[in-house]
Length: 226
Image 1 (tube, rainbow, N blue to C red):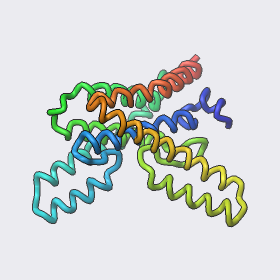
Image 2 (image 1 turned 45 degrees about the vertical axis):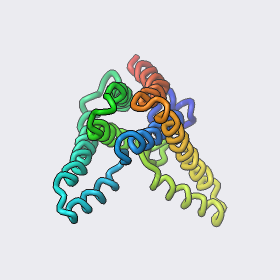
Image 3 (image 1 turned 60 degrees about the horizontal axis):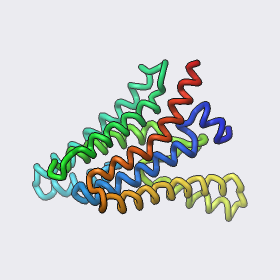
Image 4 (image 1 turned 90 degrees about the vertical axis):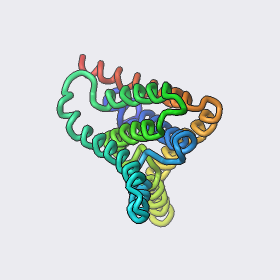
């Protein structure tokens, strides 16, 4: 299916929408690292490592601080398994998720700098969990839209097959992952730049990044319904 057909029928698998998701993820990593205590809230590997260190240091307060965003992440994943089954008509779950992300980012932007960092990092962990388990592929190719590790791996694997096995499809898949990695990088650069000028309000720009994706998906939902 072409990109144009996907934008009309199943936009959540289009390059445009998944690219927006990757850009948003890169922005969030910069935002939480610069403004929210030097943490990366998109995935939970870091929290697991910090939890292990807190346990080793007999630091229960720090351990709880690590566990709370993990619980938010679990709840987010749980919702992605239950909510789509309840939304058979009207807007698709993917469209509702994008609108939810915009709303969450808008609310975070109103928090004062003195607010506990945990509020923002928990909210980011929650929406990233939902995004990660909802936008799982583009053009039928499995991918992650909240972090880069597996996308890097797949890019290298496919470049290897393209060069050593002269596999044209592998070459196209490799560039597919590279494009999404670049979207993540662009989001991170934008986040790093804007956080220094707009502080906590920078996340409103991230919400604006998602508006085109939301419009495309809602229009597709309306056409499908009619």
